Length: 107
Image (cartoon, rainbow, N blue to C red):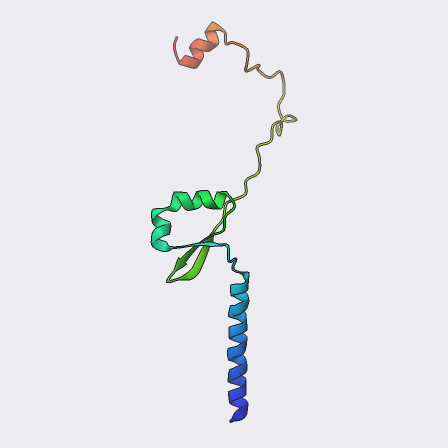
């Protein structure tokens, strides 16, 4: 049956096109490592990812995972300013003898 054969060829073509599209999204500049190398050089790979390099770990030459850094929000000063009441200590001021003894756990 010609209709069945044409349908099979069309399905194969669609599968091939989907795989080709997936490969097109894979950056050629990605640094690909096998699992063994990734395990033995994980610290190096983490540094490369943190430096913005595209690090991919493959199994049997097939890309499996991408190593990407987690974006962290910068620390913001004064986020609790409206919640603190009363005078704040001056942390640059030397401690009194009593505070120093309390701090060091001595009587």
